[in-house]
Length: 94
Image 1 (tube, rainbow, N blue to C red):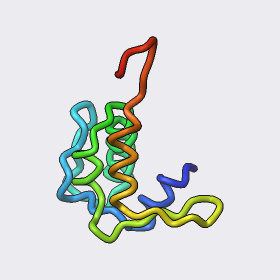
Image 2 (cartoon, rainbow, N blue to C red):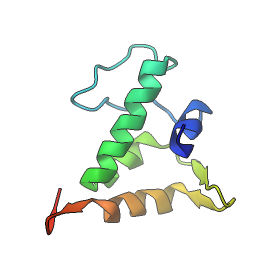
Image 3 (cartoon, one colour):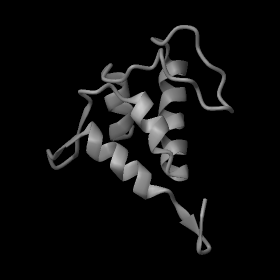
């Protein structure tokens, strides 16, 4: 279980108001495992694309992540990181 998934399960995310990724069917109930998994996959896909707008819409303003070493990262840093993170493959950004 990833740290991000545990964070999602803790209820720190506002899933109901975020559009689900194109390939995942949206859940009408944001409190289901399917909705949490869809949000987690959407976040992963957004980081791959460098889609900071998706991550910004996904996270509540007061969202914080606590890393395995105890470092606290706020929403602004997470969004900035996702913008810069867009993955590269064979010299091209995906």
